[in-house]
Amino acid sequence: MMKKRLSLALVFTLLFTFALVPGAFALNYSSRQGNEATFETLQETRLTSPTAALALETDKTKTYVSNPALDGYPENTTFVYRSADLYGSFRAAARMNTNLVVFSDQSFADKDAALAYLKGLGLVDMIEEAKGSIVLVTSADPKAGFGTADQSAFQTLQTVMLAQKASVKTGDTTTYYSDAEYFGGYGYEYYIGINGGATFLNNFVAPVTASVGRVAGMLLINGDMQCYRSVATSVPVYLVNAKEDVVAKYRQANGTDASTFTGDVVTYYNQALPLRKVVVAQDDMPDAAKYIKDAYYNLFIKAMRCSATGGTLPFSLCERDAILNGETPDGVNVTFHSEDRFSDVKTQDGEYLQSWYEILPDEVLNNTAPAGSVPLILALHGMGDDPLMFADENGYIKLAGDKRVAVVSPQHQEVFWTMKDGQFVEGIECEIMPKFVRSLLETYPALDASRVYVTGYSMGGFATMKTIHGDPALFAAAVPMSGMGYTPTDEQAAQFDKVDLPILFTTSTRDLSVVFDEAAGHIGTSHQTQIQLFLKYNGMNNFTSYDFDQYPMAGFKADSGLTVTLNGEFVNHRWFLNNADGVPMVGLGITEGFVHSLYPEFAKIMWDFASHYSRNTETGAVVYHP
Image (tube, rainbow, N blue to C red; front, side, top):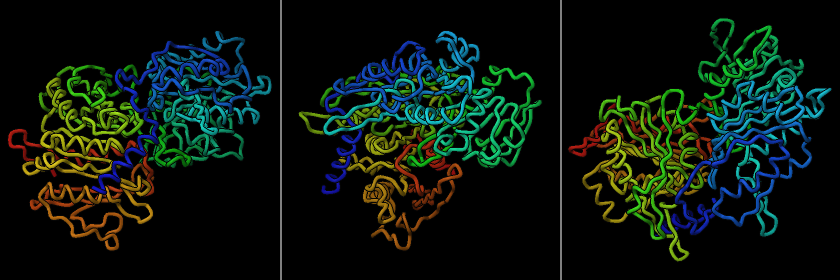
């Protein structure tokens, strides 16, 4: 009971840390802003963004202002096109917005001329299908062109655009900044430099880790680079008419060791980390619109930056599968649902599961996949996250395309816990998530009831534990990530007398202390307890005690394991314990040096484990596929 109270206390602390508004309903949740397309000067956005950001909030008492860092920004140099229906909400959905930042040495007489320029480059059509913003940056001194005077303005603009949910507290008053929500983003930032704009990016952005380390791709047309400049870190780049020494600098930064060519376009790439590439073209009369289209669809939308480094720059460069007009290039449909289908199961304050994203391959929707052939993953987001943002940043959209699996990601925060008379009480996760999954299996004949998996991160990891205790026989495997353990009722625990469940717990060495004790250098009390619990559930021998001296971090002798490096940057260990039949049923994964954060590599870890299991739907037995 003491452990349970400590866990509950930590959950409550996290709830307040992520600014949950007591009594604020999440019904009719939307991850979109519902706005019409706009085109403004940067100065105009500063006037309109506070009202727009406040309209997304459930707490209308908040105060929004434009970030004062922009106070000295040179006027009439920067224009902002916002697509219709941007991502954004009182959650972190705005991180999904794509930002195309264009540096041009042209000057424009008015906004109409600037907008016509962007349309002529094909950028407006691109951003409307992706959702996000185009930011057109021109020099503060059109006659002199881009130079050191523009560097400070650029650094301010980049910081402001990526400062999601930023605020400042003075005394008891918190003031929130509106700019990033209005036209910014986070991991999908791509730069286009044309002529003098390309030279500016070469000289003042590429050499600075804190600047280029946030960018997921660049296109540079006719740019030069001072001989003493260098490229600070890896970045996917498309170079048109670049000199050999400039190409060499980008190749060195990306560690390229192989090449391929199509016609006159040569692509140098890193064989181990193929996102790190340098595309090179020579063209006496380059058509900017043509190269923008090529760079966007064949380079930009395949890469993202994520904060797996814990804020240390450069951010991790990771794979992605972009959503364009509701579908990925490899045929995965992303659909938002808001329905009252499950309104018969409510929390004590009236909340119910209403909103979710379905991430389904074409063959599931059009019934061309054989009946019962497509696995289903229930993916549960963390506290304060948007369900689609979570699915994207933790790699499940990319996984759906690569492995042709179905993924569903519900908006479940308000059904996880609930408020009653000012007190936190248990929600309905144990009951509603199995019901939700069964409804999906009935709706889509292609889904395979023998291969249903559940996973989640942080609060979603905790929710994974609740879900499997609701109906463990429904799932073939579970992967709770960086989440605290759940204390089951006697009735819930009794289900495991007849049901086994393969499970992999994951954490990292800089995780929440209850999950990994960083000071002691080993898994925390929550994971220790949960591993023992599932050894018991699966009819396996429990430890008499953990021995962290002999078995660092994990504390137990494993029957098998592996160590890999994720994305060329983080060492990941996995240990597995086998049942009497030699089947690995309980596992532990630990990533060294990683903070409590989302990471596209995590979907691969989940799939590497879960895909080895199915459940016989007639007998209920777990089937292992080595």
